[in-house]
Length: 90
Ligand SMILES: NC(=O)c1ccc[n+]([C@@H]2O[C@H](COP(=O)([O-])OP(=O)(O)OC[C@H]3O[C@@H](n4cnc5c(N)ncnc54)[C@H](OP(=O)(O)O)[C@@H]3O)[C@@H](O)[C@H]2O)c1
Image (cartoon, rainbow, N blue to C red; front, side):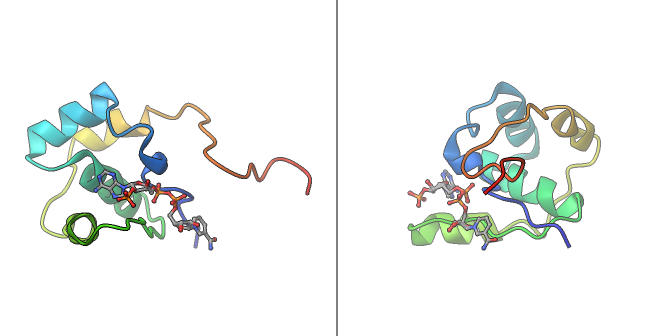
């Protein structure tokens, strides 16, 4: 299994216009959209939050689907690295 590393982009892309548009269309939050994208991409996803309300929000992703929005999110790949880059030699 592949695990999503920083599945919420450490918060740096939650305001991305496409993520925002999908969230608005589905009546969900940007974080829920990103977690759902991971699930629908067969990735293990462990979003992190220090806030109980956000932990609950991030877990409430099993009652909706991205449907046609999945493709728009797939196309957002930009090579973003938020931490350690596995392509670098240790
Ligand atoms: N063992 C491994 O192989 C492995 C691999 C990758 C990552 N990890 C761990 O997995 C955890 C998650 O990764 P990460 O912290 O790098 O990145 P992340 O989950 O992408 O992002 C966490 C950030 O998003 C914010 N956030 C969480 N839920 C949110 C929401 N609903 N709305 C808005 N902001 C939200 C958090 O702030 P608040 O806390 O203020 O809510 C925090 O700043 C980390 O503990 C990381 O070390 C482990």
